[in-house]
Image 1 (cartoon, rainbow, N blue to C red):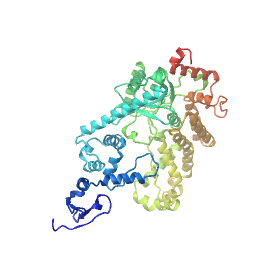
Image 2 (cartoon, one colour):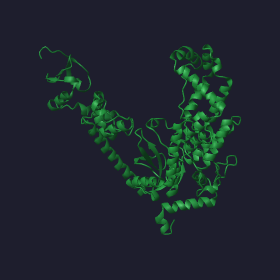
Image 3 (cartoon, helix red, strand yellow):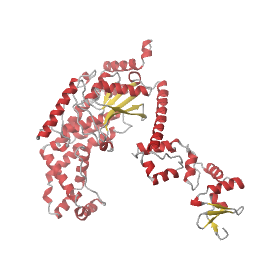
Image 4 (cartoon, helix red, strand yellow):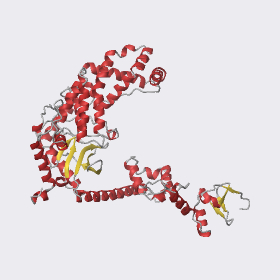
Length: 563
């Protein structure tokens, strides 16, 4: 110890009272010349020495100074300006920074398996640096922490919903089916209140078949577990237009609103697909079709309408929210209580194949296949892309832009591929000229591509607007009207005209609640003569609907004669 040499380290925090040995394994107190070990850079012994022998609390002084200097006016507690990150997390003491909430986010949002928390050294070091000491050392231990935290959140949700329910708040519900990568079926249920507030009350596991009656039972049980009653507390449910979901809407008391975004998706398919099913050419396909027909017959006999059932895969679950499902539905038009207000003449559409462009008109199909071929040429050859195409793109755009290949089951990826190709028309033509393949893409192909982009781009914009959480049925009407108007302005495009007509047909099935809200918002509102879709019901019809709704949600008031 006599040969050790000590030097000043830092003039802040605990080190303002100590000198540090060159190797960093010990420190010397300036006040009493005592030598203390700091193995691994730990300063705990230094703090203890100051607090017990010299009655100096460096942590408290630093925290007090930070609190005095903090004049930002924020509601968050001030964070001490200390070098040690551990002290910061200890000081905040926020539920969001607790070990259970951190593990729950990492497993649920980031998809980390429980085993990873026990096998990854770096991950455990990171959690340890955040101040977490009691990290379970087994996957079951991590599982127990996450599930216990889920139970706490569930209890908080139940208490919050009970408080709102006591205050007279009513809710709406959105639900849909989902199939995991392990081929397990679930039904997701969300509860909504006014504004953007909503609660996800979990996935309901579906075993075997799920007819409409079974779906209603599962929904009612899940709501009851959170203290809500389907008939008394739920104003409306939002679903897709599958036959199963349509029947669910008929079996329950709450109103039903069919999803606008899904209806737009089906309208696009009405235009891009041929009417009717594709011809089966192989024996295996015939056998598959026969099996499918037998299953459909059994479903009809059991009143299980699952023809239009939407099923995602684990891959689809990771796609953007705008990547709408390509599992098409047979949406039959049924007479409802409000059918007299609207004219519905949409024929049913059935599809077996999900390559959208396969059944386009021949000229459009050929043009899209040509684009796919050109894109593959440059995507599969880095040399042609880097040395021939990209120099022209950089000259034209100022930076690199890469051609995109569409996914055959995503109409918005088709739009993205064609839009990018159309934008890079000049660089692509120059590159093909250098490769002596200038005849591969003709001017007619670019005209056809332009027609498809003109027809699909307004649809993409309106889907983005509809998927915003701020969108209401009234604002959705404005967005849809602008979309149809934009398509009508391109009357020379056959696809744009057909898309506008398909949108009108699909929207007629979904607007009875929007018409009522429009009337309640403006009693003098009238149906738009230029857009026969956006109709407004008569006063008598609105009165019947509103009276029925109030009678269901306020049974006690109506029972006493005071509605």
